[in-house]
Image (tube, rainbow, N blue to C red):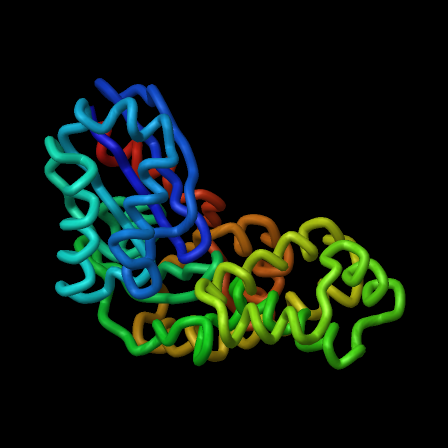
Length: 280
């Protein structure tokens, strides 16, 4: 029995399979080793009946997690998971590797992540090329759910949203300025708080103002991440993974077209392709 895990900072997706067939699955809060300590991760695991019931039967676990970008962080997360899955051999790599494997399998390609966070890299079929893009939700993540949440919160606080959106946002979330600033600057898991407001974009996906915010954020993503990568690897197929990319494919493809580029594939939830890869 194997388990495959793909985790952004907001959500971790788990799938458990036997002989190539999925027998159980679940989601839990993200297990980013930069933000979640050992105690918190173990608490998450112990709250999932699905994982508790299969913990002793799983022999191999393939984990792809945001924040697992150094040997120290990967070892840290593997050790924590090993305390729960005592009979499992655990492999931990970062989410960019998982995204690349999901989109390209063993082929080369440029892979962009637009989920709770953002990243981009050239994948040679074995590993992603190193880059300096992964700056997190404070300095980076342009185009991601974190970024979109940050932008709409800022405009809400500044009362710069159109009147109908300002009112709808206020009614939906019932948050005032002190509450928002406390959640962002004082309480833990600010990145999960910010990315949670991506739901507002999904619920109002036909709203012209919000679509313009998304178009602008995609343009920033292209300028910051994708175009520099394409310049280094011209003519390479381009793939995207993540919930933001998957839910706003038309806008993403339109931004690519504006720059004379074509997107080969967009995968909303890479966990399915990763499970197929390791099951076969």
